[in-house]
Length: 295
Image (cartoon, rainbow, N blue to C red; front, side):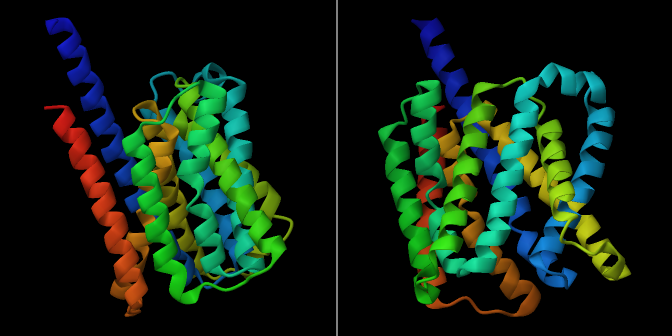
């Protein structure tokens, strides 16, 4: 009896750790729009620089932080690390192209389906059954996202919306893949994603036209906040399910407008406050519920 209680406490503490890691990842990634705005280059060139600096930073940190070293970390991860990098390439590139071909509001609404789609993939490929409480939280978060963008929602077009569907599909598949293959180096996964992204975007980017300021700004993003935010979001899949990670990452929709207000004085519309409140309350209640179960 005491053994089963101890096991339950350990499992719940692990889930709480996963939630906190996912929140930290979402916090770091929420700075992406700030760096992109300051960079002064197009979306394609932003993607190129992000990929380039990520491909530089991740191998260095693997060599410094992983006792196995870079080569062993990659070989031990096996083929899933390459597949994960390709999925990251798909999600990032389709996201950029989606924003180019439809409204940001449309893209955001479609991306909010990530946790629900991850739940479907987890059920199909991992046999994991998503808890009812998690489904309720997912629905509430998706509703909050819809409220956030409702003030600027436009019809868009089928191409941009279709690309957003591909982006969220790749994202959800990647979360599910890394949930299954726990031993994959998360830094190697992000590093390969950055490498593939830099190679793909090099065909449309013109690095010779970038200013020193652009290199510095995107270097800060590509070397630190953006890749480590993604590493943390992937590490979280070792502790909680892919649907839960996807749901928690949606808190970016709350953080990003706050940074826009702080850095650029952009006052979010009332819909952003209303939707953001729904998302924050939902995630707070969910996190407190998980912490309570671990007591």
